[in-house]
Image (cartoon, rainbow, N blue to C red; front, side, top):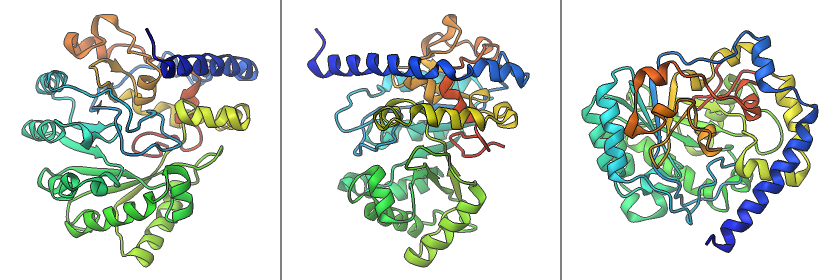
Length: 346
């Protein structure tokens, strides 16, 4: 039998789906916009990024989290599934980057082993670290040195360079701990020119609006963090909030869903659509299932090739020749300058 909590989630999701369908009646289908842009069906290029969600457990409960991660989540990738990841990476040279995400990926007990095994394959490794995990427990205090020893690129969310806006989105005390963690990363060389240790930050809007221009905001961030906290970093990525999971809850409860979706539709950019991350990225769920992107993964929209939708039956040619699954949330990746796990795309 389902738990009371699971049933409550199911009922809430059903109610939200009814609300969404009702409000989307006046919105053009994303596939129609892609047809107009000459991009339908959307096909992948050669996949180069292997993005792996190794668990939904997290020490934070952020309001904008599309993974719906938190301390109570039990979904976690096992060593056996990690080995399937390694097997695919050994076979396919086209995957040059492995992007490890969560939850807080460092909370997976096999995280360090997995990283070290990937490093043996000479792949570029990205870890999406929420910063506060470094201070959450003594066993994580050495993460900056571990990242350095394994030449990991660190990508971390910092909603803003002020405490009030960051804590409002990510929880009380998060800003202070994030600043301390960034200083620890700087101490071992991260974000310092010439060190080769990449430290990139991520900005998400705190309300129902699109992000500002990436270049201008990056300059603003760099000046503020350096002058106030003597913190340096390499790049700022601005990411549009996707209308799924907790952010979708916020949009519906606040009555902003239709307005927000209209903003995304009106800002549709064919140049951004041509460069969406799902074209060169394969997303792997904690249980080994395959998705076009991290957002489709959270909606359980598996890749459109049943003969190769799991690591255990991986066929590279099927993945390369599949059609990418599109839905209304895809407007979030194609609005304005576009959005991806690496920021603006156009």
